[in-house]
Length: 76
Image 1 (cartoon, helix red, strand yellow):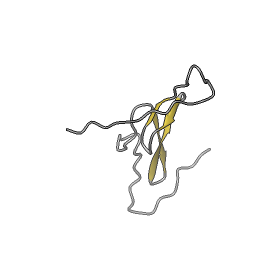
Image 2 (cartoon, helix red, strand yellow; image 1 turned 180 degrees about the horizontal axis):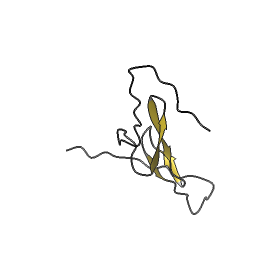
Image 3 (tube, helix red, strand yellow; image 1 turned 120 degrees about the vertical axis):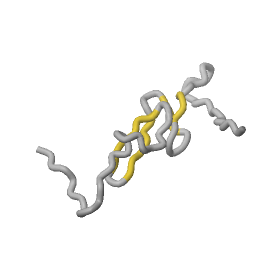
């Protein structure tokens, strides 16, 4: 049997993943941690930054080499 984690009195426990209070982007899975969270890449995706992942794409001529992708953010 697993017992709930002990928390100091007066401190509310927030599951950032369940309450959508996180910055995890597409192609990630939010993992709840005590007092925080992390964003893990889904299978087949590689990390771009702390909160996002992009499709893993291999070069057909050199299948053991990963292609490098530039990421751009739209600024209006």
